[in-house]
Every structure is written in structure tokens, then in C-alpha cells.
Length: 342
Image (tube, rainbow, N blue to C red):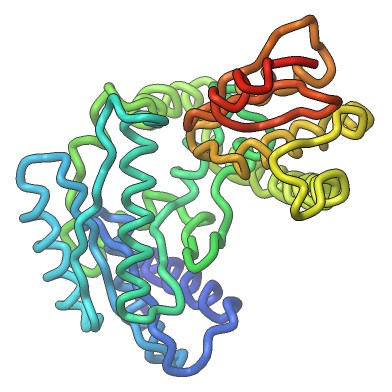
């Protein structure tokens, strides 16, 4: 008799992901595990599949230090990982930025950035080739709705990719209900993070209020449809991003500094120009997580809608202004020194 269907689905997703990543025999793969149902099911699948693929399976849990008892929960998750036979298992602490700092992106983004930084350190410390993340189809649907509400453009609506550097997301086509069923079938006891139900967080409101209403009014399958839309949009966004990178290299070759010729920018199609402007702002020091569509619109206005405005302020203490036929990026002191002149 084979495994429970939910267990089989999760294992198959992990097997396909690892088989397509180009790993070498003996490579170490870590499962990032908070102790929740999604990451527990993921870690269990890795423990089963890794040796069958000639790989080593390990685990890592991150303590964000944002809740009382978070250190105890991290130890509990690490114990569960070890109980699955994963080795090595590490518990790391994330340094989450606090409100009031420069370029603070908000509580959810700050925790996410700190988590990825901690996972990077953990993977580097044990020379792991990849880190598996437990994001599911439902997480993808929530991400798409949040991007839609924020007016963040195609890249945001494309959701989370299946791969970001060493991070792999095998479960993007698996529902949260399936991971819970997989845990139940294996007698795994997931931890429910109270922050996931806290209406103070936008994602929690989408999860517990918005998506249920959409399902009730439009019928079942909304999460799956949103995730499918994300996959389709990602192919388009990847293509446009590649074109934008090529155009940025053409109009601002290496060594040209943080400035772009205005005439070359104005000649670009809007879909490409907005991406070029975003990339240039990040190259000048803007934190990607804090750079919004509103900031890019301010840059666009300097290029195609200039009415004498002196500059636009960007996250990270960066300013952009027109000067001597170019869109220039720098600090406030730079623009004052240049006189902010066209």
C-alpha cells in the first residue's frame, strides 16, 4: 500500500524540483522549517526523497525574535527536523529591522528580508547547494492579490518564482489543505503561528477575509486560478525585464556612473522605460523592497512629464534630478551641489 495521496503529492513535487535543479550527487539541500504545516510537510518530503536522489537532506529554522517564546518554538521545530532524520539541522536568529530606521519597508517586509538573510548565512555556513521553502499555491494567490491591491505592476502580479538563486519553492502548485493532510497522515503536529491570523497584517486579512469571500462569491478554485495567472504573467515579466536590462546596458554602459541620457530614455517604450528606471534607482542604492510604483512614477515624470520640478526623492536617501541632458541619481548633497538644473 502506497503513501497517503497528500503525502505522495508533496513528495512528487519535491522530487521533480530537486531533479530539475542540476544538483550533484552528495549535495546538501536544506528545508527551511518554521514548524507550520507547509514547511513540516516539505521537510518530511525532503527527508524521504533526498537519499533516493543521492542527496543529503538537512534543515534550518529561523527565530525572528518577534514573539514571546519564539526561541522555544525554534527549538521545537529543530527537534522535529532531527526526528525526520535530517542532518545537519541549524537554528538561526534573524535580525529584523525596527520601525523608524532609514528605508524601513514595514513589518512584514522587514521580517522577510531578515529571514532570507538568515537563511543565506545558514546555507553558506554548511555549504548547502539549495534551500527549500514551503510556499504553497495559497501563498502565491495571496501574493498576487496583495500586488494587485498595491498597484505594483506585472512583476508583482507574477508572484513568487519557483527559483530565486539557491531558494527553491517546490509547493507552488500544492494547496495548503494538501500540506495539512500530509501532516495529519504522518502524525506530524504543525504549529500555527498566531501572526498568520493577526488582522494587523495585510496578508492575514487577505488569507482569512478576502479569499474566503472570493471563493464564496465566485466559486471554488480562485486560489488555483490566481496562481495560474501568476505563472503566465511571470513569462511575460521575465521577457520584459531581460529587454530592460539590455537597454540599460546600451544607454548607460559600465563606467558611465549613475546617470542616464534623457533623450534615450524618452525614446524607450513605456513598459521598458519603467523597468530601466527601476533598475537604475536600485543600482544607485534604493532598497528594492522599499521602491514602489509611486517612486518609479516620479522618475517617469522627470523624463516625460517635466514641468520644472527640481528632483524626486527615493528610498534609501537617494534623489533623482535632471541635469545637463541626463537623469542623474545621487544624494541630496549631490543635487544641491549641482543646483538641480536642467
